[in-house]
Length: 73
Image: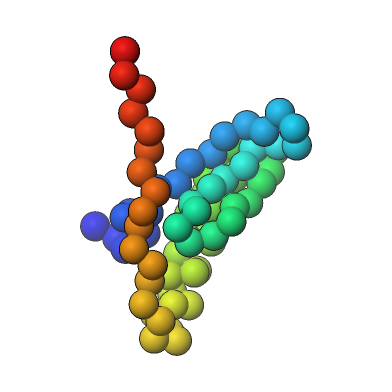
């Protein structure tokens, strides 16, 4: 498993901003764009860059705290 896989990532539509928002609150505040697939790809690349930076400077990565919410039927 890649280090990035421990962090929850998602893309959602923002009615207010009229763009797709990519989020990973444990590592970054988010990114946005018009194409949800591209936003997710960019989000994953950005997360990889953040992890690489932390490792290069010897910083400990934050523990993943964000979990997807489960809907109960």
